[in-house]
Image (tube, rainbow over all chains, first blue to last red; front, side, top):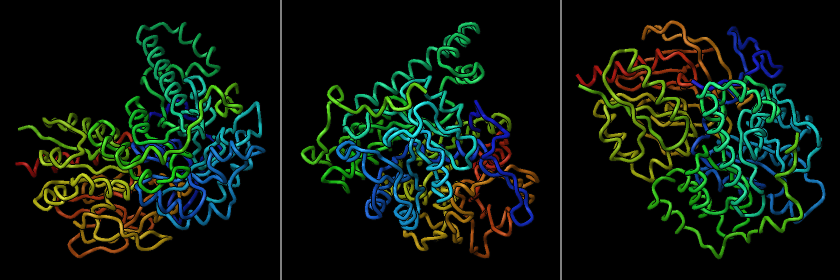
Length: 322
Length: 205
């Protein structure tokens, strides 16, 4: 069974109806979180065209994420980054059998509505796009379609889960080809999970109340998370992953799977690299196989990375205080 | 005599199946252990196998890479019980078409004379829970969790239908092989996992 911590049973996204003569129910927490569980140990690849989506599927991706521009190109272009063209999302949905996700702006309820009506399988409320609301994220319990959010800490992750996120990923620093931030974020989440678990095990409820206040979340979700000692939803790595070894390293830190943004289709060996990152993710705990995967790529073809200390735009800070 | 039941751990919801199977062994009073398996070598030591939910294209391709697909097929042909869930049932089939895209050409085990329609009930927004029944294996009431679920569109004469929902075939059995379109491991009901571990026990006797 799935952990259901933080579940809101009578949410607006939950729909009870008749299908022919049978009673069915859609948009439940089990269905939304369960969808994310089916992606575990897999790679979700950012794509901007049908051709890229097909390369991703052939390489063994578990899903594709449709964007207007890859994160590194969003950086170069500047201006306001919005959700992708619906026509392209639909073309991609018609050309692959794996699930299709798409990004909407943080807080942009109507980009998310449009994506839900388009029938994408999951919505990413993403800091790669320009936030539409600096103070609120989307109330995701209103949606039947599951939503994934980025987080840099346990507090951010639990705030997003309380808003209805069915899946969490690290924010990392998108479009940099630099894993340092993703590594920091997953380690911080893990450290904080260990901390609240040890407080829970010690029976010090007062200290858990203090944590809940500090995190700006309910006591219940802190207690339930502390009890199981892990996030109640699937947690993927994202933001800066560019090589098979990057993917394997993040899996070894306890991530449930990998999102690759610019790392594949901004490299000059996209096909081989896509395949190699899938292999390294699946067989991350067998270094010999990760080496074989790493051998499939040529470092001279990797995207030129960015030092996160010199960035003018830190995407990870978007929506972080809310 | 102790049983070893494996969960294929290439991709998908392995952990939930490990827990459901462990609980099923314990509640059935059967001595045994549950392990996650990846390689051909791991698979060769099993008495029963669960192929979990996930992406069938990914699981199929990667099992092909590490040559576990071949030994899985041999073992099942020689009578090892297998439970294929969602993507797992797709892999057991002879052929699989996508509802929208048609022919897929993905690697399959071709162990049961069934044709699969992938994403038969629609995309994720149409995923649903509903009460179903599997009367022939004495599970009259079960909460079916259908996530981008497939259905069986054609069936060979030697294959038993375990359950239908809205006229679609959602669970099948052929001797030692069971396939379901829904996810028992996402619920607290372990009756199907119990049925499976008992099947594994009988096959070893």
